[in-house]
Length: 422
Image 1 (tube, rainbow, N blue to C red):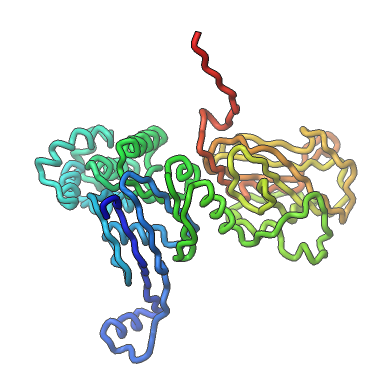
Image 2 (cartoon, rainbow, N blue to C red):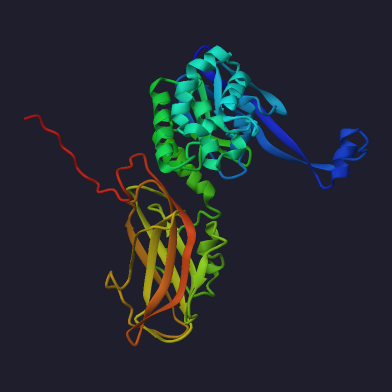
């Protein structure tokens, strides 16, 4: 362990799942007789090491075991089998405010949490100014936490956890708390820790942050460790895990709906928005769509700077003159960022007859900043000079843009920079 901060060796975590509360009771009392539970393997023989001063990311789909392994490392959970060795004092940003007493004031909770982490009152006195300055909730620190807004509560909890000078920092989806200015402060503190040579384990669905900050990445899936390596390779592998089908798209080929190759819809490869805003006249129907990366894979995770294609397949129920195929990217807050359509691109098809199926393909480079976006697609047109929406799918699917370099605003100008001494 000389150069290791964390060593996880052959760790398993198995939960017992019961159909009825009485089954749990009988099992606890040793009266079950027969097996009354099912086993859920949250972690299956997971092993890895984290060197001192290293920033390691852990990624994976929901239910892959990311939070479970962090809770075992921090001692919140005990493994069913296997060993974990830690060399250094840990601060964990897992469930922010879990140790807070809502009846106590903010100040009282600061000292309470400090004592729970092993600090004396004198040591917390030395850190109090930094904690309160970081939280920036003003006079509310003297009020009971039950009077706080959710934003104030997580700000104070984050400030306590981040300002105790840990040797090892464990972060689980906790850097995006509070407003945008507080988030910027959280990321600045995170970068300061990295520069100071702290050991960091970082779990996030924000793949761009993982790519930017992590020296190495571990990929988990359904409790198994699939692989570990550099961020780019692991993110590419993660994209493949996200796919339900890795079939290639037959570029430029429009297949009839009855063709055997079309039995599996393109859109079945994505997690669709259950609350999609869908409407239209019904004269045309978007029967399928896809996002395709530069390698021809179905994916909604696109690397910034690479080419990708959006496909929209439309079945026409009636004759429509000059239909328009569209797409739009919006932020998760609802701001339209960019988009285009076949009218803007001067790619009309003239008359689409009833029963016709057309596929519109939009190929472009991904120059949006890294982050999360929502994709909308539609088929529209004009009848007698009046706009008509035949079928619209607003916010139908989320799109993740992975980037290790974000500039200002939504869009990267891809500047070529030279600096000369004169």
